[in-house]
Length: 386
Image (cartoon, rainbow, N blue to C red; front, side):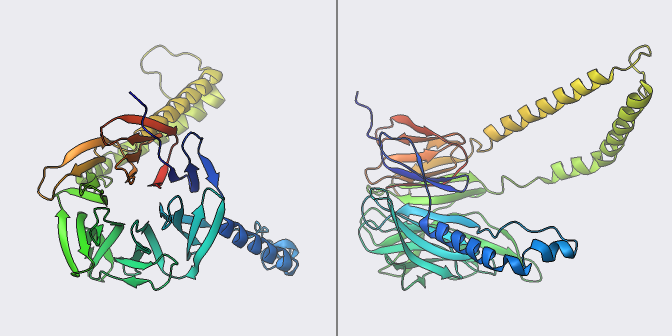
């Protein structure tokens, strides 16, 4: 049986954009726009350094440590296939201002479509059969809205409103003029500040009729990152609602054990110094009194640290739990079908191939169910098949 064709995949991991072309290893893509802004910031730093505004002699004279050269913080907030085949479009936050860029991996060129916007842009998705991009816009009051703009990042207009957070929009690939997205109600405290969110549901916005319908909802679960595949099947990522929050029993246990843990830590602290300077621990329970070997104490401490590191690594290896899984519904009233578990993010290619990231790798799953590893990579935050 022939191996499935590898799709073109772009992903953001550890804050950097990577492109993986068929038959090649992933390569990091440096944003020319971000590099330009960083170089401009360094030039401004060099020009004004003599004034002592950001360090130098003025800072030392007043007893302050000189600051590092000016840096520009950038964050990828959205990644999608581009409006033209084989291209990418992504949104950035550069020094808290929004930008939208288009990238062509074949030529390695980046074109800036928008920059300097004070709107918080997220979750871009370009339309495969039209010159439009949908995205989400976050508001200062904690809500979020679905918006659309042209492929040139102009004429941005918001389509949804209300006290909800609407995220993760995607154009329907089944030939209908619809946008699917995740939506959750915002809970507020007495002062009007956001206090929590309800479970995310999957909604569809019909652009012709201006109507919103609910495609999928489940009590106690968040349904996020929706996709409507070319055949009309609905894909989404299911995860327990509020799974990362501590339960009341965990909080109560920690509260009851706080005082014993505090006294135990204090005793161990004093016990170490007693053994260090007298050669005897504060307690000899469990056996006859014997001289404590400081070297062995340090070895035990190192072993304990190594064991803690191992535990931390094991926890990191399972930080995407199996309850985070991709589900598919072939029709609106069909039962959900679980496809893959332990998924951080995913996308559906034009031919129906599923591309998804786990904790440590990216995989593809063809429409006939065959599975193949694409590459080993950790901490994937966003992913797009183009």
